[in-house]
Length: 161
Ligand SMILES: [Fe+2]
Image (tube, rainbow, N blue to C red):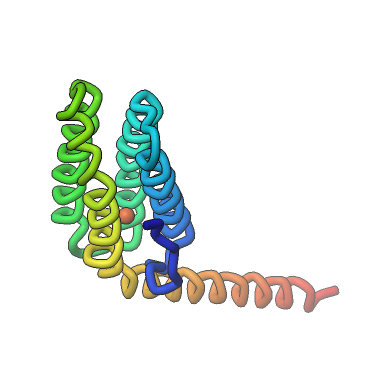
């Protein structure tokens, strides 16, 4: 079962949304790789790629949270650490597993990843949306004020001509 990106998943920030879309794609690639005859080397590559991308995404998300002054950024960061540790552990376990243990492991993995991602976005990241929107409104206001000040000073400078 593939996941589809929905507008309801948007946290209002382009960078974070693009990352989440990419994570959705990666999990879909993972799911496609574990049907039929499984190429374990390919699955391991996809899994390790997912871990790496998740780490980079968390970093970007944390930086944005600091920028927008998200009040829960600290606990969010701790949550990221736990998830990343868990994902890294799973990827390592998978690459070390062989035979039936590996086959069994793979069976539950797609569902786990899907649940994790939806949980991450829906339960956790969407909470920052009001703060993202507030920050965007504030920066737009500041830009408007700046443009008005420039226009006024140009007007004043132009008076003598
Ligand atoms: Fe996220």
